[in-house]
Image 1: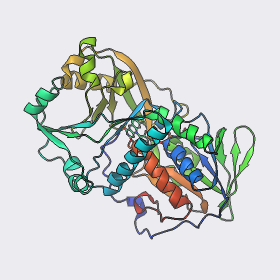
Image 2: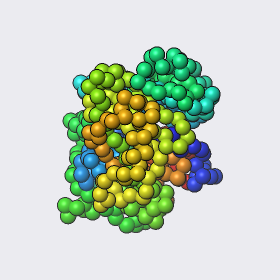
Image 3: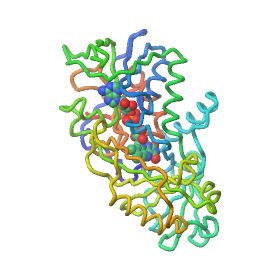
Length: 397
Ligand SMILES: Cc1cc2nc3c(=O)[nH]c(=O)nc-3n(C[C@H](O)[C@H](O)[C@H](O)COP(=O)(O)OP(=O)(O)OC[C@H]3O[C@@H](n4cnc5c(N)ncnc54)[C@H](O)[C@@H]3O)c2cc1C
């Protein structure tokens, strides 16, 4: 979950021209490396477009090393002045709802999102209002007095007001990846559990992958949706574009006396402009989740030990004791060290290798990608098969 990115027009993509990928021939075989939220949903949409699709993952869909492998992720309608992400989220929510219904699973929990606002008119919220109106959506504003009555477990003493977004909530993340994989395979896709290494580019094309099972895997088009691993995989092109930072989330045990009150609380985001703490009180009964959105140290997604930073934890606990006094002595039930796959400006990346137009990069989720995955996958599939132009905000050149 990130609020830090400015989502400004991409500095690395100045002077972009509108580009279409060459139309893919019917029956082409597309290999997607990475079965996280981005790769999984893109594979499903490519399959539904009539192509032969193979999804490859080193450790499995929603595995514990992946960014998509946490229990839950926030979904919110608020994206400041950025209409691309606003619209993407509207479409994504439609798709989460329709797919969970047809799959008979509960993946989206419409708990709403409560914003803790320190300023009179925070840009993040106010700039979204025209898009909300366009889609017939609205927020509810609470003075601190009203909020104190409605949410008695929140200390509002240092806030200016609170804003409730009734359309958001949270998503089951690892379960969502598993559900996408299940659908992909049952609709006719192939899955290979192996680590993949790209081959050298020859004559403007990538021809195959070397797999950890010893096989050479051939396809017509390759999509690398490897999250935080993209920088290591293509060091010359993405080494400085995708950076991987250590991120922490803690799951606190609420007192039994307050369990039902916290369970019925919305997701919350503390818009202080510094740590950007956020939380999911209900969190599918896994403990009151608190996340730290501030970027941590550089992290190796394969080999780093996932041990919390005590200083970051202590600071988060102090914040929680202040904001939710009933949690002053709450024990730590679980914690999780994950990683952001940061692009330089927080925008996603969907573009081709500069030397091979049959090799795609899809990533840069930058701490806010999960919620968008169904809609991003739908869009990525259209761009990759050449039926829709590349999206300037996601282009690298
Ligand atoms: C702590 C935290 C909190 C977040 N909160 C939110 C939130 O509240 N809301 C939100 O929308 N987003 C949130 N995000 C961001 C979101 O989780 C990510 O943007 C999204 O999950 C990225 O998905 P992905 O598919 O690009 O990457 P991943 O999920 O990391 O998937 C990449 C896959 O590639 C595979 N792989 C890597 N290398 C290879 C290889 N060589 N061969 C084969 N397979 C390979 C991996 O095994 C992995 O499965 C958060 C992220 C973190 C870390």
